[in-house]
Amino acid sequence: MTDTGPWTGSAWWEHLVRAVPLAGEVATGEVRAGLDAGLDADLMTDGFVMELVSAELMVRVRAGDPAARDAMRALGAELEAGPPLVGEDVISAYLIHVPSPGEPGGDLADVLGPRVRAALDQDRDHRNEPTVAAFLDRLLQAVPALRPLADVERYGYHDEVLAHPFLGDVAEREIALLTDGASLEIDDDWTEDERSTVVRLFTSVDPDPAAEVRAVLDLLEAELGTDEAVDDLIATAFVEMLPDDDEPGTEIVGMLGARLRAELDAQRRQPR
Image (cartoon, rainbow, N blue to C red; front, side, top):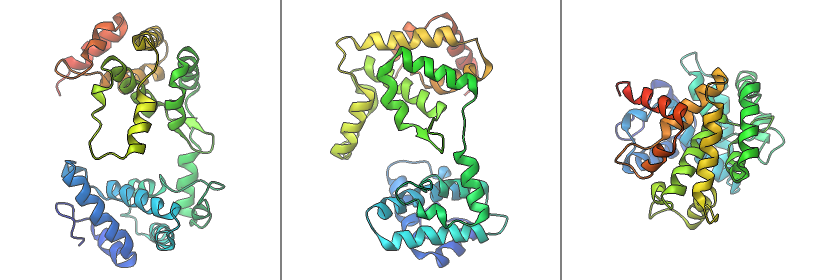
C-alpha cells in the first residue's frame, strides 16, 4: 500500500502505484500536505486522492513536464482497463482536470479510451436546467459585479456556469463585503497571486459595498418560491452558506427578506 498515513488506498490503488509510480509519489505528497493542513482523514477516499493527483499532474503538464504527461496518459489507460471496482467517482476525479479537446493540453483527451472518453463527454455536455439558466442570467444582469465569479465557474463544452459552486461563491463574496474581507481567512502561506485573485473576486472597490449585498438579497428573495430547481439552488448553495451567530458576517442574516429568513430558520431547526 502507499505510505500516506491514515489513507492507505484500495487494492486498486496498490496496483496503480506499481503501474504509474509518479501517481503514487504525488498521492503521498498531496495526502500528507492535506492532512498537515487539517483536512479530515475520512475525506481521503480513492476519488478524492485521484482528484488531487490529477490536479498536480496537470500543473506539471502545463509547465512542460513530459513525465507528468506520460503519467496522465498512463492513468487514463489504467482507468480504461480497470476492473468494475474502479468507481465512477474515481474516473470523474481524474477527468475533472483533463483539458477538453481543443484546449491547451487537449491531446490528453484525444487519446482516452472509449469508456473514459464517454464519461468525459457525459460530464462536459452539462447544461443547466432552463429555469436555473434564466435565473443566473437575471442575477448577473441585476448585479454585474458578479460576472468575474461566474466566469471562474464556467465549465464544459457549452461554457455553462456551474450553478451551485457559483452561488456558493456569491454567498462568500457578499459576506466578505460586509466584513471588509475578514471572513475570507486568507492564509499567511498563500502566494501573492492567490491573494490577489481572492481580493479581486471577493472584495469590492464600490464606496457602498452593502448596496451589492442588498441587490443580491433582493433578487434572491423575489426568486425564492417561483421554481423548484431555483429554490433548491438558493437553499443549498446560498442559504446554507450563511454564517452562524459566532461567525464573521452574521449581520447578513439581519438583511434577509421574509422568504430567505424562513428558509434559513427551517434549515437551522433541522438536527445537525
